[in-house]
Each structure stands twice: as C-alpha cells, then as structure tokens.
Image (cartoon, rainbow, N blue to C red; front, side, top):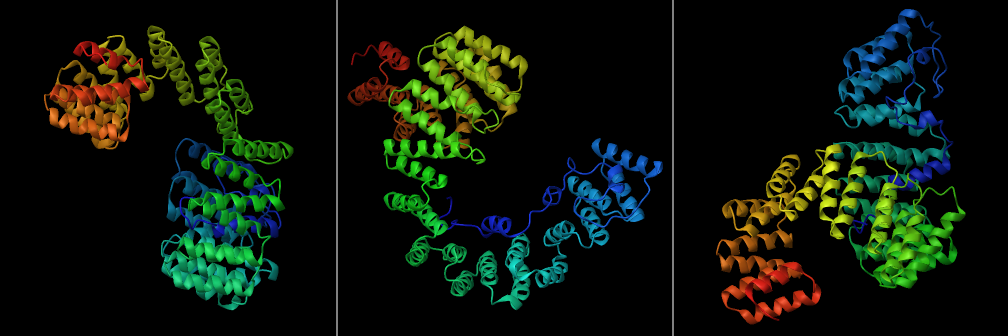
Length: 594
C-alpha cells in the first residue's frame, strides 16, 4: 500500500457488493459507450435496443441511411462537428435515443463537453427509463456547474429503489458525487439526500466518505462509528472506520477490536495484515495471514502475501512453498483470471540464487501465454539465463522465438541480442546487430545509445558522438546520453569545458546518480581541479562503492600525494572485480604494484 490508510476504498468494495446483490445487466448496457462498440447507423433505427429503451417505429429511408452512413465515414476520417449535428438532427426527427447516444459518443471522443451534455440530455429525454442514460447524465453534470440538476434525480432514484437495493444506490450516488470538483457543495447535497435514510448503516458510511473528502475527519469518524453501531458485525463499517481514523495506531486498534469480536472476519483480517506489512511488522503480519489460511487454505491472496512476507523476512524456503501453493491453487481454478507471472518470476529467481539454472529456466517456461503482461520479460530473462550458462547460440535462438508484433519489444529483443554478443566480446558482431536494428528503428533512443557505446569501443568516435547527439535530440531528458558524451570527452582530455557542461546538465537531471557524480569528478580531475574532483568522487563512492569509482578516486588521491589511501581503494576495487580493465590500465600507467 502506498498509504497506510488505503485499507479499502468504498468504491472498490461496493463494486463487488453491487455485483453480488443486483441483477446482471446486459453486456451492452454495462459497458461505457465507445466509438468502436457503437451500433452501426442502419441498426440505430431498425432494431430494438439492447438496453430495453422504447424505440420508435421509423422507416429507414434511403436518405436517412445515406446521411447516417456519411456521418460515420466523416467521423472516422477525423471530423466530428458535421457528424455530431447529423446525429442530433436525426435523433430529434426520429425520436430514436440511440442516435442521441451516438452523438454523445462523438462529442466525448472529440472532447467537446458542452455538445456531449446536450446530446446526453436529448438521450435522457428520448429514453426517460434508461438507467444508462441517467448514469451518464449524472456523471457528467456533477463535473460541471450544473451539479444542482443531479439532486432531484438522486432523490427520486433513492426513493424508488427497493429496500434491499437502496444501500447499493446510496453507494453509487456517493461514488458519482465524489468526482465533483466542488467537494463542499457535493457533500452538502449528500447530507440532504441521505437524511431520510439515517436508520441505514450505508447512509452513515457514505457520509463518512464524503466528510473525509472535505477533510472533516472528526465528522467522518463519527459517521463511521454510527454505521458500526447500527451494524456491529459489518466488515465494511469497520474498514471504513479504520480508513478515516488518520493514524496507523488508531487504525490498528479499530481492526484489532473488531477481530476480537468477529474472529472470522476475512476482509478485516486481510486489511489488518496488510497494514502490519506497511508498518514493517512482518512477523505479526505473517501471523495474521496464517490465521486467514486456517479458515481458507486455498486463499490465493493470502498465499501470495505470505510468499512476499517470507521473502522480506529472508525465509527463502518458506517463500518458495507459499508461491508453489499459490500456483497450485490457480491451476485447480482455470477460471481465475489472476496472472501467475510474478510468482513464477520469483520462483525462478529463488532457483537461480541457489545455482539451479535448469530449475530457474523451467519456472520461466511456465509463462507460456503471450497475452500475459510478463510474457516478454520472462522470455528475455530465460534467454539471459541461457547466455549466462555459456551457450550463446542457444540464447540468441531463444530471442528469435519471442512472439511479438510490438515494435518497442522487437527493438528491445535486438538490444538484448547485441548485449549477449558484447558480453561475449564479439564487439563487431554486436555493432552489426545494432546497425541493422537502426535501419528498422532509426529513432529508437535505446538502440542509438547502445550503438554509440559500441562505436566508442570500436574507436569510431565521430559516429559515437553523432549517435549520442541524436539521442539528445530524440529524448532531451535522457541524462545518460549527456553523461556518456561528457565522460568520453573527459577521458580523452579534449574539449573539457564542453565535457563539464554536458556532465553538469546530466547531473541536474539526476543529482543522485553516483555514476554521473563520478563523471563530474573525473572531468574536474582532467581540468586540474583536484579538490573539487575529490569531493565529487567521495560523494559518488559513498552512494555506491563501485570499483570504477574507486579507481578514479584512487588516482585523484595519488596525485594529491595520499598514496596509502589510494592503494587501499585500489585493493578494494581489485577484491570486488579482479579483472577490471580500468584498474589494470591505471596501475600500469602509474607503475603501481599492489
């Protein structure tokens, strides 16, 4: 949770609550209208509507068909005003609400609020019993200065709602009013509308949420307490009270007190466990999740949470067991839409950590659905593990097997292919891969950046600089391009004022980046500013004790005469990376033996 009090949102809970208590709406009525899903023009006046609107009997003349068809074609070509007017006129003439709805879709797509509202008004006029049209109207007017028009409609909807559905209607009303820009007016309207229903716990919950939206926390707490008094076993009331308290400890007390009286309250216990995680009370959180599993052994949310908590407690074996159980439960429930990707990636990392590369790859192989959000990441990671095992050809072949039509992903695959070749020291082959990739994706900043770095290693300095300047033009906020060019100039000891300016700009974009700090220290050293160089490099090394930074700081100290500390830093660098080329060349150039 980003916020300790994001225990629950009323709208999220009531979405589930509403689905459980209200009849299923037709698929078309439940969906927001969109240009892609709207009815074709001829159907708008020839068939009964899916939403149950009472439709007029209108003959679809050739003239009307032509006008509607032309309007649709013009709209698809990027025009909106003419098609909108056509639909509005046709709706008024035929009294068909679907044409007014189509006009509202066109105006909304064109971001024309006034025209959209006019079309929605006409839609409601032509289909007064349409709940969809009313919902659109209410959602629209609460965002405008005409919010007062919503009040009588809300009042009528609440009065007409059956007793068993009135609670849902209260929550739906609160959700719509919560979007208003005028929070104070929306809350005053809310208090008037719920006045006849204060014997319902839902009324006090929506008042609590409304009070919280205008920072009236004391009022919010009072209303949540009233809801809990009316329905002491309501998990929703307890969660709302915990949410509006404003303090972690107070929220804890609310949830603990409720659980003492209602030990089987699953949602409250889950919220309490998540709150404990947020407060870094990991052992206590684990205990709560374990209690959840006692009553619901196959609770996938609890199993996943226990896996994450175990990882944070460095209980790798426990994490592995929970994630395996999580996946087993998902396998038994093919209708569950949760994506197992993250659990599979974690299990792969656990196997990799203990040196089981075959096991790590096997877990990644289970991410076999190209529709999964993590499919590409899993395939790339799989190829990287194969490359790390020393089989370069198999790793590159694995990259060719990644199925994607996304140009950004295709470019990423080529980047990784070049990386494999570069790591294997096939620099010219890697350069060729990137050179060909840029023929396909000439404006891809990531490809250009890696291409520039390889050009430098192949001593193609003009090409390197041209490529980095192209990155700067395409992605002006790419600090790495400025830093790379600045460092390259500093390393060669040329155009040092320009190098300093480039690195300074990179540092302004990312002031906490230790490698850019390192570049600043190095350019200061090249310019003869030893004190400034030492300051920058010590800051960089304090943030990240990287061998390369240690090599640079050591050389600055060596030039200042502090040879003992310089040698100490170089020994540290050698212990971390015995094959570091920068260290070897520096020691050879200074004729130093460690």
